[in-house]
Image 1 (cartoon, rainbow, N blue to C red):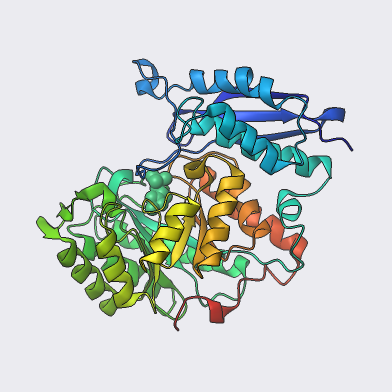
Image 2 (tube, rainbow, N blue to C red; image 1 turned 90 degrees about the vertical axis):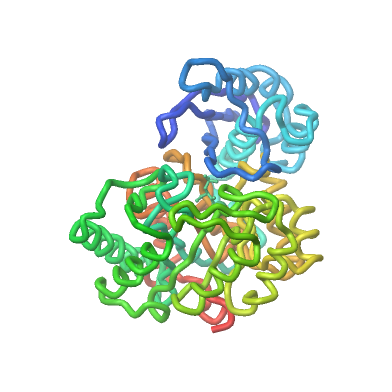
Length: 429
Ligand code: 2PG
Ligand code: MG
């Protein structure tokens, strides 16, 4: 069937924070369409593709009329007649059309929604699920290991604690389905614990419990207790993973830990985190220091990179060249892949390939502002990425993605969804 693009339509829809966002719909012959919605971050890296907002008073300045207009106008004009099956060609057209280094003219949100919608349309024209379309060159698929938030902090919870994501990874689970079951039990146990302790104050942006704790460390204590209360052995069955998102509370090598009422320098912050790694079953740490603190990142990686994932998010912003330069200074060992940081699928895939070239692991990740869009689950499976980060185990913009993984696991077979081999995850165990 022809995959010639007939039209690209943009529309304004709403995200999980009640803010406007961009949906793109690509029309191919015979009624085939592909649709995707741009997500949005709150703790963003400075090198991310530009999230174009209208400003002004409506919707707190978060309007996307201009970005939607770009899809309906210039993007529609430039893409009509191109082949949706040529993702690289279409994405290059988008990049050239925008013409800026950070996609600020048309908007990274307009571009990423379009780029993902193109992939959906092309897959639909071949009657394939997106994961299979993207994974045409692979003969063996697995489900990504879920990395799921239990407490949300930092920019997602009024900075009640400084650390942004307190997450778990069900490393002992035999299948994707079981990893979700175990997470559901820990999430429930954490809620019960917070209620009993009088700490329950609803949920943060990504569905994790609002962290009404006295200190960052108290959140870790509660997390370990929740894992135990749910009947699991911390570390063996269920391990801890943190997104420190340190760019958000420090710059120039100085960090303000408001929850702990102290200021630290890079060494002080790293020492604190290394202490946590010794005392808690932590197997993954994201953005342990700020994006402007590469020497500290390299030092931290040298100290624990052989046994812990050191995940680069703000630090690399899903950019192949930034991954290469981080790797050349031995900073980090795992890339967070967020398509809207790059702006197109082709650039996201290039970042993933760069991570693989330098021997890093990778994680496909959602943003704190999300929707019912489940594209990232298909990217993780189709691109054979071993880990998926989506936020918590509540709120349907999150659950839509975990549930899509269950549907894919049924097609793949393998008793609830085969996970990456345990030996490859977590590292060094
Ligand atoms: C992150 C993400 C998800 P945001 O920092 O990794 O937790 O947050 O989308 O706000 O950047
Ligand atoms: Mg992050």
